[in-house]
Image (cartoon, rainbow, N blue to C red):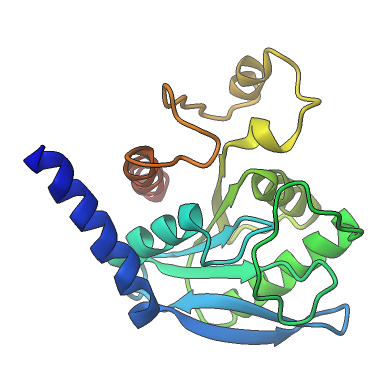
Length: 211
């Protein structure tokens, strides 16, 4: 019981610490809409993580846990909120919410934020997407190949695309991707799985940085 309480207390401290580190930045996007993102400048030379959750903002619990942990580890972190046609969008949306944005518009926003990030000399960039955001990151990286992108991590990808084949993990591995399954984890990595997810992300970033 004491161990569980310590873990929960540590989680509360991490979530409460985020506003002290997060800087809100704005960018005029190719669509003419104003975009917003949470930004943390990390240690020089360590690299940057472009973090995205599509319908969610940086305040969504899964993203906040990742943002905070990456910042603690010294990474520069940029977590843009895709506008979905709403200037300076601040609200999270439900997964079933109607949105009429086109995937090309969303990828163009990611590219604009990537360019904003690289102009600040962030060093190698790692793209990290959750749910539909993982699918969007794959589409963006395919449309805008860049040697400065060192790696791409997708979390809970299957929940974003019901048309994936049943053997999708094997197909990804054959294509050269490394696939990890967290047993009993929910789509949003709730509870203690958020810590396991952060550990996995940090380990992948260290492995990629050494390769």
